[in-house]
Length: 133
Image 1: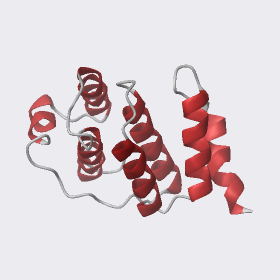
Image 2 (image 1 turned 135 degrees about the vertical axis):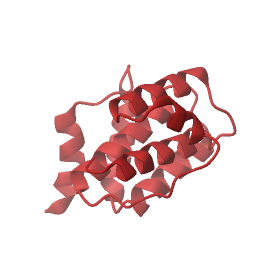
Image 3 (image 1 turned 45 degrees about the horizontal axis):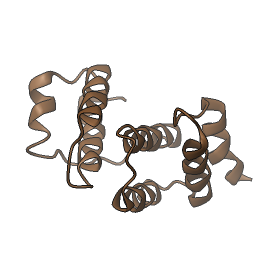
Image 4 (image 1 turned 90 degrees about the horizontal axis):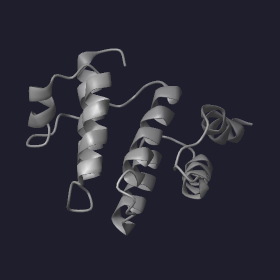
């Protein structure tokens, strides 16, 4: 992330996604707290983002868009409960990010089949780059 505003925007988007199913599980909160710490967002601001969303800024780099999509997908799986609204929303977010729908589907399917819901970085990159040809 280049700027503080971009980092806040990413975290705000993740918080909004976490509560799309109507509740925030402890595991989702813990995951978001870890992301906030990695993004160097102080605890007070992190808590404030639950009350007031920051403006979402478009991510310029395709690599960063893929990484944000993957973070959201991990967040979707962290509570071990998949809601239909989450699945619909993650697909909509991926499309709005300008990501290829085939790459989105391939990534989500691989995560669903993985025992720990994680995929290798090389797989993630290939899932989206193979659509460039």
